[in-house]
Amino acid sequence: MWFTPSNQSNCRTFNEIISRNLEKILSLQKCPVTYPQLRSEDPELAIETRSGLPALVLAALGVVYGDIGTSPLYAFREALHATAGSGSHRENVLGILSLIVWALTIVVTVKYVTFVLRADNRGEGGTLSLMTLARQSFAGKPAWILVLGVAGASLFLGDAIITPAISVLSAVEGIQVVAPGLSGWIVPITVTIIAVLFFVQRFGTGGVASVFGPIMAVWFLILGISGGIHILDDLEIFSAINPLHGILYASSNVGHAIAVLGAVFLAVTGAEALYVDLGHFGRRPIVTAWFFLVFPCLLLNYFGQGAFVLANPDMTKHPFFDMHPEWARVPIVCMAQPRPPSLRAKQSSRGHIPLFVRPCTSMCYRVSKSCTPRRHTPVRSSCRK
Image 1 (cartoon, rainbow, N blue to C red):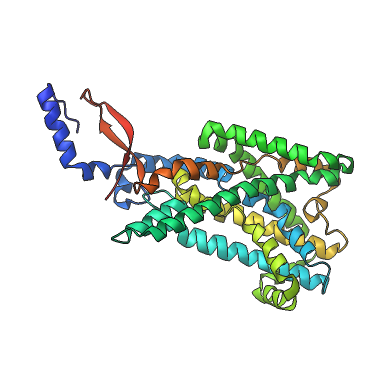
Image 2 (tube, rainbow, N blue to C red):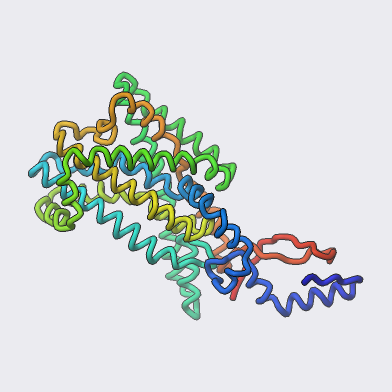
């Protein structure tokens, strides 16, 4: 029901009513994840339930899973190279693959999807949001939590700077397989692609998601199909599901363990985007995309690479590109290029800065100053319980 004050006096009275009931007004903010009691009355949630969820899942693919989607290009390859040819080739492949599979399962599925995504700050995620939640749990808001939050945000920004270089460079390195004579152009092409991708981010998350969402959906399907085909090269590759292969591999290759584990960690590069972009898409679209497309396709591709290397021990230099037929390599190299790197770095540095001085910046609604009936203006305001 809308009030229709007819004069300035009534307008002041109306504003006083709003001030006294500020908490109730703020409870109408668009943070459905934190306020489940409003789910039945939230029109945004109703749209998502009817037809919006597929669109949000597609958008999340383009923004959230860009980095982790490129990890099959280099993670398994670098882990194989880190072994330096020591030990049995079959045991090395099964051990490395087992480590990658369980890294994806424990770090992403168990840690982020099951636990971390539930720790939202009024629907927002990220290091600084988590820091704010931690500070609010103490009466005095200790400074050491603030220091940890700043350190975590700094490490996150460093990761967001390094990850695009690794992802794009690894994708461009596929040119070596297709046209070895263009090897000298790998770095210039990489720099150009990164510059273009950073430039297009000025159009915002919605614009980036609308472009890269369909591209990433096709990319993950390609990963799953190409990997699934090569699993038939050696069905024993499924024994890598047993974590004992990874444990035995790490214990018997102590000298290379640190380098190998560092390469295995590349398989989960970009997993932090699930939490950072929580405020953009919500938990449900991110989780849906992970379980129904991203996770299965990543596993299929890693298992396919492992089976391909077991069947072709001499083709470990670029297993991802080598396992595709020659006619498909050029399209695969082209598809591997476009990714939206470090979009979350800009969001973290600019969008979460207010969290240092106030716990949450949320979209709320207030009646416009003119007190015209049924007119309201979205404003940014600090929302506290």
